[in-house]
Image (cartoon, rainbow, N blue to C red; front, side):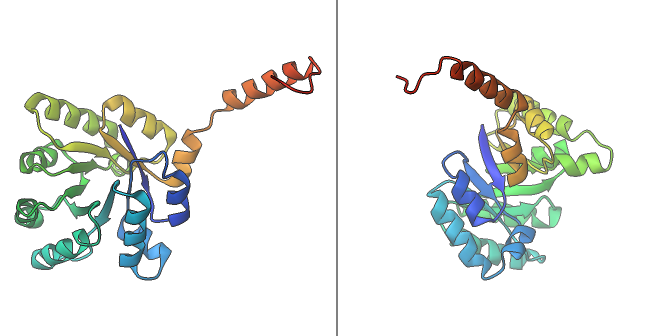
Length: 217
């Protein structure tokens, strides 16, 4: 399973680059970093040395989306272009795929949307778990349904579980069989900790001190 950080923070990406499999960005992340977003994306791509970096389009009109996507993918070889799962972009997505542009279809909320994108053979589909739960829909069930569908029909598209807002979401996405997940830095770091690990370490340390040994081994 791939683990992506959902951020454009260079320091956080650098800190965890030895563990993570890539990064997902969006216009909000890049706006928080300031400066030239193209340069920020290039820095991230260089830092991750070939690992996937998803970068979202900001244009609305399909023709402009196509042109922008081509420019985004030219930033680095490991860029994956994020395009919302909206019917007005379907022909654009097909055209880009025919030109070997790797695409992460984002803002995906239904099994049927996922089916169409899998038939297109996009690289990733990103079901938004948290946003579905915001409207009282079981977000993780969509990930499970997508997994069943992809396995049943032998599609190559990977499920990238997104909008994960807790360590529990992270856990659920792993169990649901997502190919990849993307999480904010704070949730990723929190997921690495466990109170019982710290308690166990303290117990072992206190017991070891009872031997009163200066050096070991």
